[in-house]
Image 1: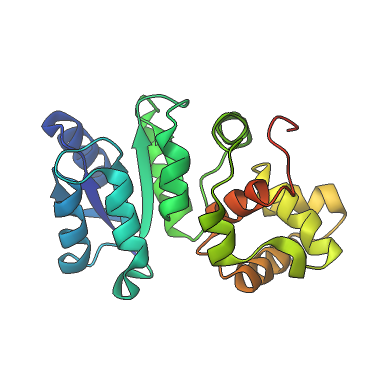
Image 2: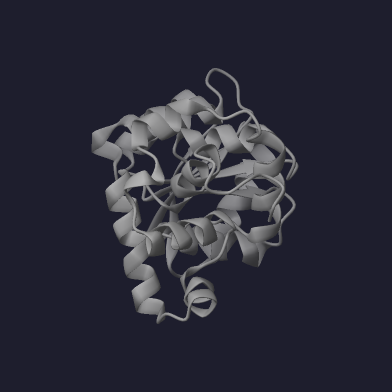
Length: 223
């Protein structure tokens, strides 16, 4: 199956470089390019993209607001957003995750890492590596945004095992790592994550991270 990619960045050279790279992969194609957030929203609908590589800082409508509009559109429920930032410490990353992004990348990543990230997010996983995720959450979620937890519901309705799994998701662990940590099979860990997403009404693992920290299940700075 070919991954249909929409590239959204206001810099022509960046878009051209990413387009060349994505087009070189046998399992993905660039279906559209956008120079503003508003264009990205419109093209997400018309180009039938599976995934949007979204720059945060763009004119007209920034990547955060564009992501929020895409995540709120029922017709675009299957579209994944992978946000780009210049620095790992960009405070807008957390707002992008709150808005519905499935992960983030720093622009100076290696070409192969971008392609792997696209595949990961398109497959339904969230791109939340432990290092950057922990630093970002610790720095920018000290003041909870209750909108996320009130909209999705907190972890109080989860079983003890599900709360353990959620805490590990919030630390950036993948299903195999969660299974190792809790003595489970990878399939069982995946099932727990899927049930947690269903119970909380979350879009994906990225929203689980936000819920875990904003509800106090995981305390910033403890990971």
